[in-house]
Length: 149
Image 1 (cartoon, rainbow, N blue to C red):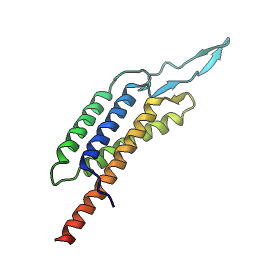
Image 2 (image 1 turned 30 degrees about the vertical axis):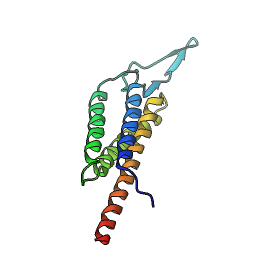
Image 3 (image 1 turned 90 degrees about the vertical axis):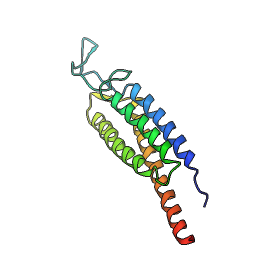
């Protein structure tokens, strides 16, 4: 079986971090009309996170975490340690958070999920999958080195 280059993990993480950054910037949700008066839609006055394009509230800490993840994966690629743990941790946590957000928006009739949230879910799942591949590659290398020597 072909061994995956450690540089590929860095490239995949950077690409998925860029995808997540675009997802953070794009709107996550739009409000649907609460009703109509004389043929004109009216909306509720509540504020919902992710209504507008641009970086807001939680987006800046999420960007910092994404940049740190790319840096950590780049540093770990050259050492004995695997990048699997940070990728699995960030991927699992972000998949859980963005998945719950998506289900929350889809569970209410007056909201419609927008592309930004779908990009975040895809990037989160991608980070988790890259973490699984990195873990399996690390275990395979460890197992081969102990049986070869």
